[in-house]
Length: 322
Image (cartoon, rainbow, N blue to C red; front, side):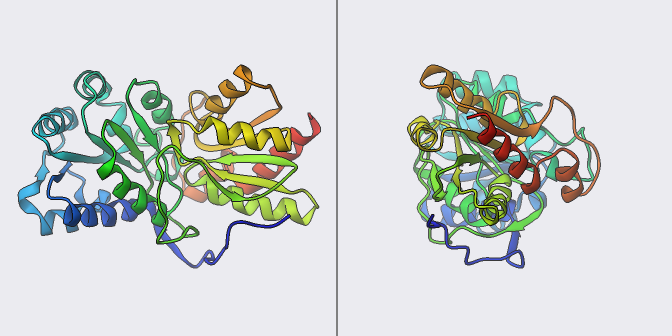
């Protein structure tokens, strides 16, 4: 089988996805005078400092007042601005869900909720700062677009794409440095899955940091004569059901891989599609109904089974169930 992904980059080429957001926001501000930034006392962590420095009149430091930040963003959107809010994913969703539901989603306001330090890879800060439920919470909201890019380049491209997207959106990214393996000049299409590697034996649908783990798993499977199709589901909602069903129609089985609870995330989106159209074996890679804990990102991904080795095991199990 022929690869469709050119692995130009290696493990030595790494950068945190939150920097992709910061650089994307700065470029978006230069391109569009209506772009404004809001942050809840975490400018450095969200990499929003460059935007604040270049556009001080378009930046609002609201302090540790996330609910107020969402309200301010909703008001700015009414005035024709394109607000990008920034804080940790836990505070971007769990702490302010009522404000998002009532002030943003219900009235379909053009607010971009940008969330760093998502999932387990926040690391040593532990379970109180990690969040593994956010994708499920946000995808259940009517009108809400949910995006979870895989590396620095894709996060920057997604941030830029959100400027032209009209409506509420949740952009999820992370803290650790991570391999850069997608092109810098990519065109990010909201709601359009990206087939990264062609395969015939099993479909691996991955999102966020686990896209790289899926790429590594594909290489491991290939050494054993198993050809996996790797598809990057960077947009959880709107969900590219057609791409998912087309891949599984070819391979006959699938694995979902996400840095999130197995409940409510990418895996459940795939399962719902299969139930409605054509059932097929599906194995989940995700957190099994538990909170996280303190540890390095690598340690936590290994402990909770969110790595290439476990994707390989899940792929073999899915194949065995065909």
